[in-house]
Image (tube, rainbow, N blue to C red; front, side):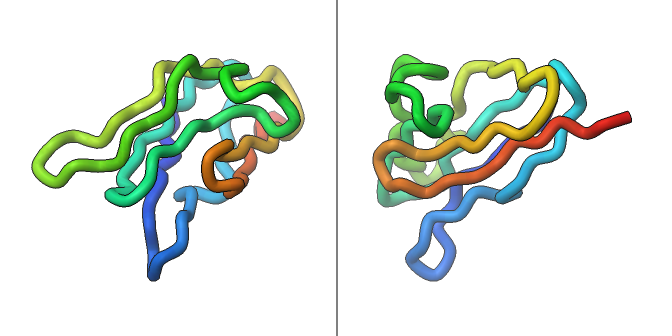
Length: 97
């Protein structure tokens, strides 16, 4: 299982890590630690609800961050994803053996 954290650093939205390297078929989650904006993660070039049915609401202090449902990573190659609400993008790359 791997996690991408959505954070706000010096006023900018960042994905940590910006490029996630996983094994084929590994499960990936996104967590929203951004207290200002909602985020809706989807595969670049696909419709907004391609991966998830709803956005992740902003982080509320004292509560756990909102987290996506599980996404099974690609079998091979690199997938670029984006937040459809902010335009920020990141990558998931499947490691070769």
